[in-house]
Image (cartoon, rainbow, N blue to C red; front, side):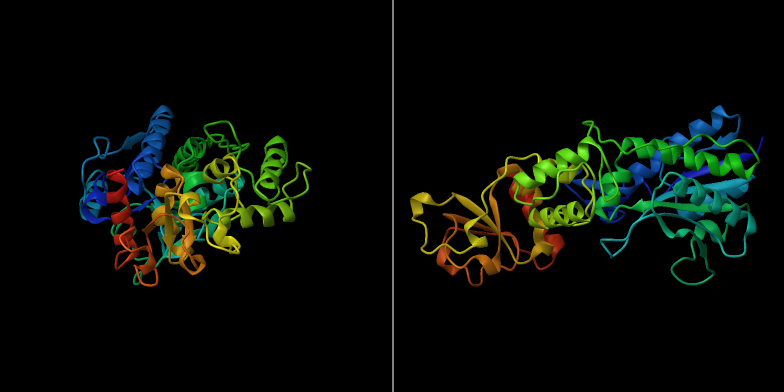
Length: 378
């Protein structure tokens, strides 16, 4: 049988050492998504599936050892592997980038064959692709990946969705059902490459751990109907017809913007969590009151941000405490007895005197760290 070598991209402690190859998110219990963790889950699952099919599969990271790129390529070459699969998830400066793709060396027909198999199964499951599902790595430039460039055997580097895009992270990378599908798709790269029958990867619907489905434009059924009902409860009314059409998509996006979520129109775990909260009256800042509230009527604390871009830094704080979040431009008068600033500093808010806690940093990353440190003291 052919010999396959599989790697999980990066190392188990890359985030801790560099602060890279991961992202802060309230979707994870520890507040951080580390790319290696999902890479390892998918790679390990593919290894187990291929071994059951009788393949010789090398997985030197079984014990999560650290390996440089050179060590990985040298290992694959020294062991005479017939195919190499390097498992990753993608990242982008764009927060709307989406989809999965497989990279191959530009002049490797065998590498392209492996990449095409990956793209075919992604598309067959109705999952989004990036660059049509494949990308030819070039000898120079950003796509000159070491693993593809220096391997002696056909090689493919997969990028299974963007962990920097919340909807990809929430609906695909952190979804156990999709992870299992990705394990099979990676196994199928080897199976079909060597002329074997592919595993069935049919994904009927993406279901969240609590039983709710991820719904979006084109979806139908009971979960869509319930979403339409609760959208109306929050003031974002749409027809209740169990069909996720353009109006439901529009109202979903408006609701997501109002909650500081990514306005992609996809109702996944985070959007469901907000929808199922008891609707709250709109804060006074959304429509200035005719006269200021008395001190005894004000909430104890509120959070102020400089723009919606600061919202990720305070989302966990808002969820934990229930304190209202105000955009700085809306704070025309005192809105709480005490203000927690997470964007823009104290300027213009001097009327609060010593009732200010300034968590703003010179960069958004520093602000995130300041908010995390503040939460530890709560």
